[in-house]
Length: 125
Image (cartoon, rainbow, N blue to C red; front, side, top):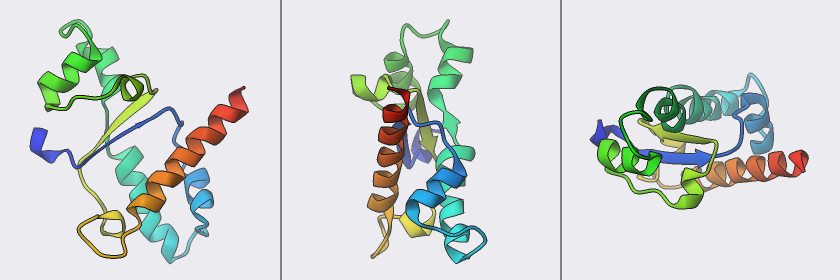
C-alpha cells in the first residue's frame, strides 16, 4: 500500500463537488466537468480518509495519528497537516493534474482547494 500513495491532501474543507467545479470555473456537463470531475473523485471520493479511519479503527493500536502515518504509510506529516479535519490519501492522479505531463493543472487544483478551505473558514468565523 505504501507505494500506491501518489498524493496526500490534508484539508479542513468539507468536500463539495459543485463548489469545487464552480471555483475552477467549470460548467456542469461539459468537457471540463469530465476532466475536473474525475480529479474531484480521485482526490475526495475514491480515497482513504486516513484521519477518519484512524479515529474509527486504529486509534486503539497506535499512540497517535502521527505514529500511524509513519508506521503504516511511511509518511511524516507536519502538526498543521495532522490538525486538518481530513487527510486524504490519493492513489491515482488523473492526467490533467499529473505533474509528469506538461501544462498540467496540479497547482491550479491545489490552490482551488486552499481557496475553498479559506472561504469555508471565513464563513465559520
